[in-house]
Length: 147
Image (cartoon, rainbow, N blue to C red; front, side, top):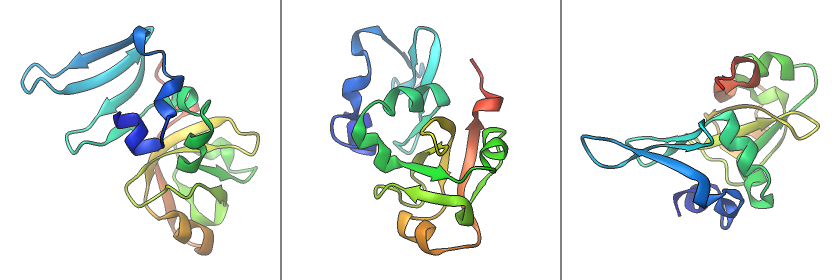
């Protein structure tokens, strides 16, 4: 339910729920991480949000509604972003309507491949109109990937 709430109705249907491994906090009993076949998909934050990993974004991108939580960057900067550099507004070519400041986003290259995940600094409307400033603070790029 949390994935559907945060990323769009039905997005969780691409997750093989019977194979997910969930770890819980010993102190609070709340969900801490979600894994699939030993690979970390997401971490649940204390504020109720979800921090996606590259693996998690690659799973969720299979659902068409998830694209509303993604931004596409122009060619040429995708290598830098895949290395963990922040995304600047001037490099955003497309962005989904569900993006708000503080939202979890996946960064895609022009070919639709996930190259990074991070937290949006600007809303979708701001990303479309601004030509300066950081749009997304990247947490993990594919070149930094932790398998």
